[in-house]
Amino acid sequence: MDSEDEEEIVEEKEGKEDEKTVRLQKMISKKKLINVEGEDDLMTALNQLEFDPDGASIFYRNAYDKSRPSAEGEYQLIKNEVLTSPYNNQYEVLEFLKKGTFNQVVKAWKKGTNEIVAIKILNKHPSVARQGQIEVSILSRLSNENAEEFNFVRAYECFSHKNHTCLVFEMLEQNLYDFLKQNKFTPLPLSSIRPIVQQVLTALLKLKQFELIHADLKPENIMLVDPVSQPFRVKVIDFGSASHRNKAVTNTYLQSRYYRAPEIILGLPLKNQLICGPLVYDQIRFIVQTHGLPPKQLLNEAAKTHRFFKQIKEIASQWRLKTSEEYESETATTSKETRKFIFNCMDDIEQVNLPTELDGIDSACEKVDRKEFVDILKAMLCMDQDRRLSPAAGLQHKFVTMTHLMNYGRTKYYNIAAQRMEVCNRTDRQHYGTTSRTLATASVLP
Image (cartoon, rainbow, N blue to C red):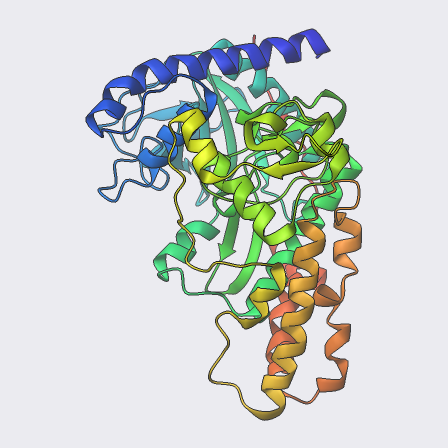
């Protein structure tokens, strides 16, 4: 796909967002929010809707809701419907799992076997079809690799059902967001965070070797394979927003709003993006509060710097963040404090949710571990994308390798941490199949 095709995708995606703006007018006015006149206002309205305490989310993050209006080009599935592939496989729809703007996901039984799979059915729309081509291309490339070793979802086949593209995946247990929600967002201990970090970094390393950008990495797209038999064994899913690095687009809709990198918010090209936050201005405000101002060069080159920053006239190329009052007067958007913990710097994390059940040497061990955890976070969330931690460097960081805990080898804390990292060992995955499996694809996309 050439650059002109990529530009068409961007234009169609943006057109889709314009349609969404129109459809949201009534909903927004009923909620007495704001007038939607531009991208920032739309983002604010969407965020207020998504975090409505009454649960009036337009994105239906966790459930398939039949009362939700059908999206353009959406296929109307029915329970027990059978989807037949050109490879003589029949899939009976058992359960509706998720419904999004551009696709829906169902749980299905592969008839004649005991295999349960997840099937993603894309909506019939030009922009979805083109992005679907990219997704199929990426999945085909990844299917030649060892999905178990590199921690991404195994894709089985791709076919067309009544002119809708269907992607068949292995069925995984639960996404990380739902797991956290189920546990009332109780903070995970570092010993549980570490194997997740290691496995996600391993997946990102393979993607980087292929010059691929996932572009939508978030808890919803990190799946727990089997929380009972393999606690914190995870896989990365959903390559629907992915792209090849040399064809990546600088578009704010490319990343989910809560996980956009500062360079995306400010309108710079993609590299290694992380960092999350709620409303667009507040997201930048939180970043500046914990990391300081973005590098001068970034602010000078970014297309959207003036939306959030003011140039200090007396000093050339010096910037300051607009105050909440200044931003509100310019956009009619009210800044809100939504954080449970307010950090003035990343080091403040060392003092949050300190474990009370540890004492003596175990407490000292956790303190050392927490310090390295903050260090890897700083490196991952570095404002300068050229200095941001790479997947390869992340896998060698002390927090992942646990070399900083070697002096605590006889402690209970260390033993638990080491035991939980065993899920990352390649030898533990033999019985789940370690051979690659080429994605079977039919000519399904225009």
